[in-house]
Image 1: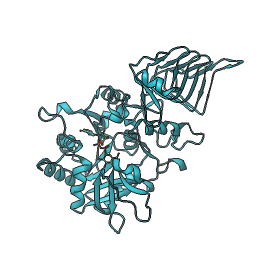
Image 2 (image 1 turned 90 degrees about the vertical axis):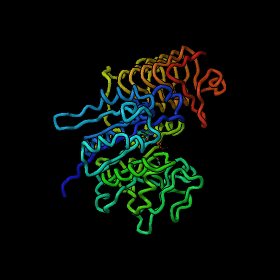
Image 3 (image 1 turned 180 degrees about the horizontal axis):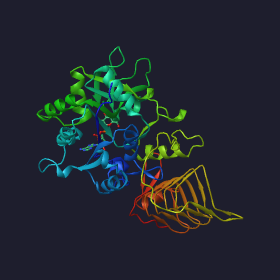
Image 4 (image 1 turned 135 degrees about the vertical axis):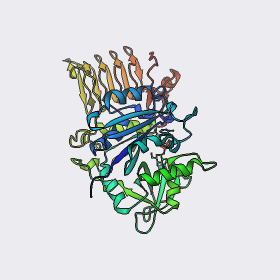
Length: 412
Ligand code: ADQ
């Protein structure tokens, strides 16, 4: 069969309230991740690596840095008609912003009309994972489905935050789809696990257009993909599930298979960074057969200096970006973005430190996330005394990770 014509739509309007203060002035898909990336780079890389080179990114909330990232980083060759276009909410039909993710697509129906694709692939922009979507759309076409929803088993106690899927006896057709249920049903024979939607969908174009039009006319609809559109297609019997655990990404290490993180909370965001620091990483950034693409600012290589007595410039079990200088400080189990400075006798442990942040002499940073351009003055401590952190206005997560926002000042 000839390759289907595929249009990619990436939903990137998420506010990410639970990631505050990292989302104080940027949309969740623009939140930095893993030293060099933004969250949206994972979804976009998966699509682009699969040859899906016509992509619309629907933005809404605080989209300035996201728009800038897309237009500077994601420039595909226009000669072949390829593009990644940010589509801001305020430029579409009428004066109102979207009411929900389905409304965002409905307001962009002209983009689908223009492209006349066979399939529309709608992906979220907030997750860390590798996936070859070609396998999902091949299965979609084999099944003759209207929509195919990617799914993964998650611990039952986490499932209240997801769309939950129950399949028919054939294991493929979706029999019920419950968006964020209070009491999630479990998988047959696995009482602790629930089958969750990853928020990634493949639609046959006609099925999507019809569902969006009918939803737009439905009184009381929240116009939400998970809450309204998918349940509608489940009712019509044309919704199928794609088991993400069967996905086979070229060059993937065993740890990568089935790795998918919804980094929606500060703790899950922090944990996913610690996964990168593991000696045998659970998520392997170094698979160059399925690269995670981004724009890397031009910086000199990382540098480590000083080795005299108790002053040693060193990083262990850490991910260190270009432009970092570790000058006589010690870094452990941490992720450092470009341009970070760690000065003499400073200690950075189990932390995520973003671009341009400076950690002064004798300072201690532990179990913390420091946003861009934070200055930790000489001798100051962050993450050591959580009450002191709260008193200084820093956010402390449920599990005790201290977060210092971009504009926040660190005092001793
Ligand atoms: P949520 O993530 O809670 O659940 P939502 O807030 O709609 O759903 O976000 C989904 C994606 O759409 C995100 O990438 C977000 O950035 C984006 N988005 C949200 N509103 C938007 C808008 N108005 N315009 C453009 N983009 C928008 C969803 C599904 C669940 C599923 C989880 C998996 O609804 O069924 O289990 O994702 O994380």
